Length: 210
Image 1 (cartoon, rainbow, N blue to C red):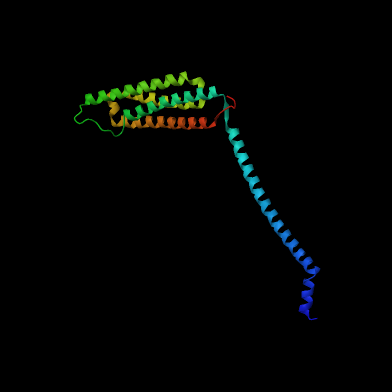
Image 2 (cartoon, rainbow, N blue to C red):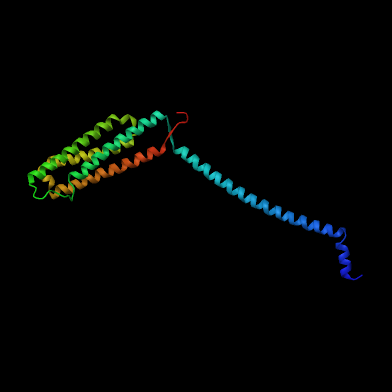
């Protein structure tokens, strides 16, 4: 019997089944190993994502200030009222002695000063309202916001006193330079107040069940 016939006889018998079975088992093990490696890698990725999400959630909890719903609503309303007053003063102080403005043609100095006096009155009323509101609401919002609001109030009062002391010279070049300094001081306190309010609102969280 030649070699080909012998090989054919072997493969046609039980040896062929054993060889095929061995090859199949080997391939199955390789496939199983690959699947296990892929599963392990995916599991590690999921665990990492979960841990990161858990850390972020814990960080949010740690930075939160938990309060009752009544506390939240009271403090929120106080901050809203304060900011409303700050906005009124901001509009008034920016408009009282602007570096550039459009004025009626042919307006006399007396008419110009009369309009200026009306703007001063508006600023004074807004400043008084800011003081009254900030003091009345003081127990219901943070000391940090109270301090920044006080900075704004002092800047507005400085502008008012500068105008009163200068009289008609308040509209001179020196007066406009001083006004710019006062506005800059007010804007600094105003921006700080905005930052404080935003930060505070982002941290307040209502206790479950309230």
